[in-house]
Length: 483
Image (cartoon, rainbow, N blue to C red):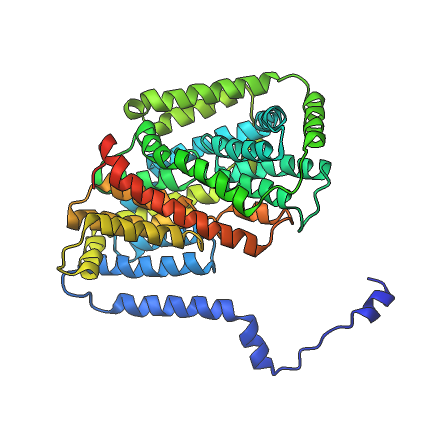
């Protein structure tokens, strides 16, 4: 900084008393210390009637973990690991059992899925596919937006929705620049980026590959009840919601963001030029596509017999065998925090279930009154879809699954239905940029204001919940999922 800059921006002096400055600068540490103190005091109290000491301590630990997840004072993965460490230290679960939770099948499934998605992004095949589809089918403004919407959704069937949004963002930005769309004013620019965000969100719940929430929910289900979903079972239940939602979602988008241009030929020519620059499909791209197709087919046909995690790891190993990817490259794409969070979350949920704390909590919450299973699903799914706007999808699943399994134990509901009722709505965060990276990425484009996202998001969120409840009531019984 030169002298002129220094004079123009004089140093601001804080004239408050020192104790007030220190108090202000250490608020985060004060809150954390207070929470630790409160948890420590609660741990020393006697448990309520009908609840074991281990169960009471696991509930206190669960409450502290939720606070840190919601407040964001610590990263989610760190909070989950701390809760895992505290289980043996507080005498809730022995150390060997606690740390064995990292061997859960869900942990290795999501690791394999991350590696496969990283290969698709790293080799450039996903970007090549995106440009080809947009150039071929985006002949008019509405058809271009529809192509972005459907492409985002279908790519999220086989890749993390976050990765799809990050991959498509520069492609859509190229289109907006080629069309000279003005940031903050162009309705068509808003439509393109919102189509990307909603497509990723809706498509992300269709399979196990769209995000971390589904494998985590299935892992918690298996740990608690021994039941499990096959790849095809989950996708069948989810797609009965996804496909109608894609149809409705597009019309809602066009209603809120009507195109303000008549021609997109310049954008199509630009995309075709980019396609020519990349040349023919390379060896790594073809091999990645082959491995991905074979892996998905094996998940659908052999998943129940061999396990989804085994197939995912074999697919990832094939990519390393043929030198399509390197470990150094994979480290850039794999979200290790999510994997660490899995072990801690599954361990804590297992403690709540094994000690009877989850069932006790549900019984106290419901009392002795009779509750309709449909009403319970309605409340749980509504809580999930609202809560996921504020905290991560995986954290919502981690918070609600132990309670949901307790509800199933108390009411006799099908645990599979409860798992879907938590995990599917937990993926439908439309309203706030903090709800999902797809929305945050769209907001970062500069074309959208918060109000644009929130108003349209509230409408599609309500429609999504109504459609979910209609599927639960009328469609799921046809495929064996009865409430």
